[in-house]
Structure formats: structure tokens, C-alpha cells
Length: 101
Image 1 (cartoon, rainbow, N blue to C red):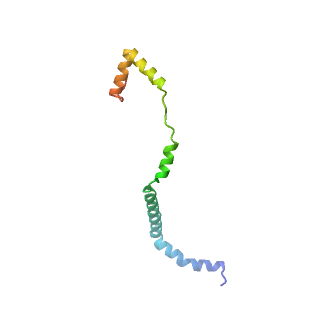
Image 2: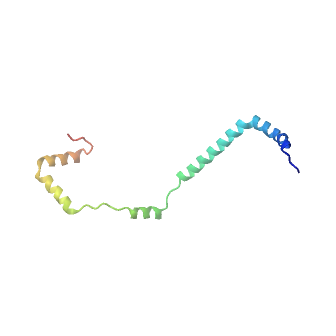
Image 3: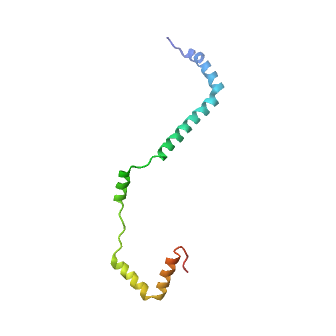
């Protein structure tokens, strides 16, 4: 088959007519298909639970904060010495979200 540039317009006429007639419908179907694919993929990723081994590995890598016992004793001693501080500590324990003056 020997193609010439003059033949391209004759061959493309039926295709252009088809696209003019169904172009909007085909475009909407394409977007609908892409949207449906994305929704299905997101749903499949959202429902995946991590394995227990993975969770345990992450938990083991978390550094737990450590408070020195001497610091706790010092703060407790300060609290017992100062009445105003003791009141502030007691108020903070009773209502930790209250704004202080």
C-alpha cells in the first residue's frame, strides 16, 4: 500500500466525522474511567492493614522519654516548699486546660 499526503485527508475524514459526533461522549467516558480507577485504587490502599511484624518493628524503634528520678524529687520538693507553686500545681492537676493568670 502506497500512502501519499493527499490520501491522508481522504482517510481522516471518517475519523474526524466520528470524533465530531462522539467526541464529548468519548471524553466524558475517558474521564469517568480514570476517576473510577483512582477511586478503586485509593479504596484498596485505604483498607490495607499493616502486618503485626511491621507494627512491632516501628514500636521498637520509638525512643521512650526517660525522666531522671532526681528531677522528680527536686520538683516535688519545690512544690512542697512554696504555697503558691503548690496551688498552681494543684489547679493544673484539677483542670489542665484552664488558662493561668
